[in-house]
Image (spheres, chains in turn purple, blue):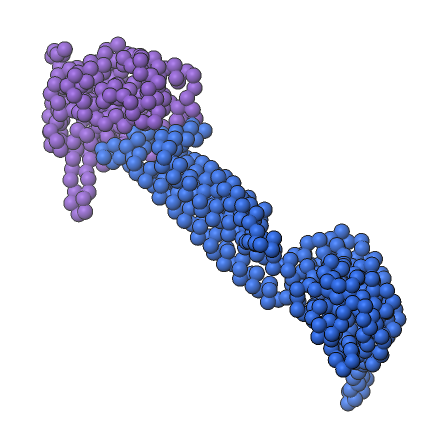
Length: 234
Length: 401
């Protein structure tokens, strides 16, 4: 089975005036379809930078990135945006829903914007996804009226709208209380298990990492550890 | 059109802010309409005041000047001398009148004999500018018959109409005889048929009207006329029409604007001042739109960042803000035009005790189409800056904030 994500020799150097800081120092990484991987590391280890590079939000200094069989590191801004829209899903710590739109409209947005509007089939899929994340009774609620946990569930549904090859999550439970965080984690695991969606979850929370099928640990810009989890805690 | 739908949703999401923004635009447009209607109203009133009692175009013979004649003998120069005693006249005036009658832009035509004379009453003598006209066209250029304060407008064969100031100076009243002495030294006793009062001192003190048939022997003009006065449907077209008449007849054609160059200068200066005020009101409206949309773009950085992250194009983001500008501009301009018209119509209905308008405002001349288009276009341009800044937002930076 070919890897969904294949990252080779990724280096990232930031310039701050005359000072150069190398944040990623040659990262090699691969994810198989259906994996639920945790990207761990202390603050400043480079995990968020790596996630941004994989999400085509940041261009690496050197190295190659292959997602779903397509080399993407040389993409233009427009090509990157199109690829992100069609092949990647994003879940951020702060959901950044559109507060003036309903939950259904928020979920449908990634498909609707390039198409010029929400078609009935998009609405139907958005509603199915909301039902999938347990928000059947909140579909027509404006996003501003949802709780934090509900908003993050809408964000998960939105990330899945365009059936992405890879879902990238950056501290998805970071802004939630413990109960809501558990629910969101359960949901991601469920979607991963039942829909076969591949997740790369950036976190510093061991509790989150413990629920994943793979642990990738970064330290000082290197991959310190990369292994299948022996047992998945509930 | 999804960008339009998003733009509309953004505007409705904060109704009080949107209402304030639209009110600001509407207020600016109302000011624009008011200034335009006032300046146009002033110009119309001033133009009316000047053109109501005078011709819009005057046709006269070309001025004759003495000129050097070519001579085969280079040492001798001949000069054609012009007689100053011979009165200049338009002999073929009937064909010129025919030409004028065929023009749809002409409202009235008055062939005249104009000259200088004296009115003598006892020992009192007063110079008068004589206007001799066809009695049936007495009011063609100046509404004289309606301005009579005594007597009537029936000129007959020996009648004369004089202004109220002239009548006072000479101690004359309707029905009294007066000695008329032309600049050719011809005397004739005429009867004052009526006394008029136009309110214009130059007319009331200096002008006398008589029948063209009465004037012919007095000014020794058995056939021709000295000038043809013309009124047009649109006084503003006088300059172009005068040029046309000069070309068509070879006569000297003078528009009312040429005769009143200082008024035209004043109207131009007034219009320029108005344009400046209009420009400033428009600029303040556009700055308001640009700053409000910039604030909105800043407030929605997170949303814009996430949209960019999941692949929404820069063009889409920019379109959302341009649509907002367009909607604000259109709605604000529409409301501003309506409120501006209502304000001007109300001001136009206010009258002074004498029944005249309190403000010389022309509600129909508010420049509505221009201000609507300018504001809408300006609003779109004003939204380009926040639209570009929103579209250029780095998604990563926006999300992390």
